[in-house]
Image: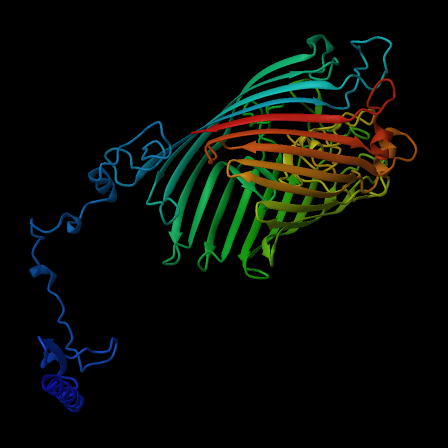
Length: 608
């Protein structure tokens, strides 16, 4: 008992002594209590300092004399030995080149520099694109002959089968460290090898000469990219830059390809500012002629007298965070009023077989605003264009003394979407103005340069995917293949823009279901109407034509078996349920019953 009492007294005394001594030792040392057996012992310890508290002045470090610093010692760890470039580090880690695997280190995919160089790279991309497409379209009967004597003398059998095989080979040679900034120099060359086969049931549909039958096989090689890109300068430490590109190059005027999306010959100055807050393009393009059957560039024909100047500016986070605004001005000058042009199948393209079928030229300027981004919970893409210009000959006016026409037309489209876990719901609205009076000196139907809209289902949609001929109203198309506008032009590949058209109104609802990471199902329901049918009534020389076109219903299944874009399989089906306006224009079967027009698309894409 006495020992325990003495131990308690000693512990209490030690605690009192520690409290008294600690203030005096501040900044020097501290007493702490340790136990040796049953006896507490006071020991000294260095003081613990509070982080970031100043503990007196620190002497400045003298500048180093680099000339007196020796080379690294051979016994230092290898990770501190400098190496000439990061590629030798990759070699030392045992990473091997695999020329067949685009996702491993591969010199053919610009993962390593070319042998004997430090910053010269080569990139090879090979794409196989296969399309099988059965469809039913309104099909005219040739005025010269028919496969079925005694049948309807205007509309024939519309069953068709289309097969397409494209092999795309993209070759890029570039210089520069491209991990954090654009390359210093890039050369790119992309030939496309095309084979197509078309089968129809009526003569003079595939070729003007009925003797050439109802099957057409065609081969074409087109050059879709051939440009030189030069990095002029960096204008900030965050690699804001100026560059120019000259040659055949891809370009799109907006987010969804409403006005122009194609690979054409041109010059473009582009870059960004303020940490990519501003982006700009200034360019000039001269259009190449297209191959009729493949739609690829055709160097066998002269360059067209159709050119445009473009300037646009992208502003990030305008009008709100997460939304990008784009302002565009484009001027199109077409001087193709000196000679006739027939496509390789024998059909006239310029001037279009429309109205009085006279050669003409035009100048038109497009003023546009485009937006894309997030607004609250919704994602929104929107586009607006206003076209103003002059056509030197109105093909429907009929006034040979004063047939100049002013162009005044507009276009608006919006597609909001909402995400609910693995489901996206999309709404679509599009309005392209139509011409209300064919006989005045004013053209009010909106027409694009070369549209390729990714909108309301894109090429899954029947109306957008298929080109529907205006049978009995001239040799023009009511709609273009891969186009949403009802432009009444001969073709978007060879033809001129036409602002004498009925316009279009589209209202749609679509859904995307990401069932699994590799499987997506999409559906689209679009209601279509003409904005004004005055031109159609004149061209068809018939009474009132209703504005209701009908319902476009489509669905698609997209499968990526490897969860990546290297293998993509797509199967889609679309149908157009005719409305009163479409029935006024087309008798879709010979017995007078209204057949549903359809399109089935099987598409496989393999990418290396």
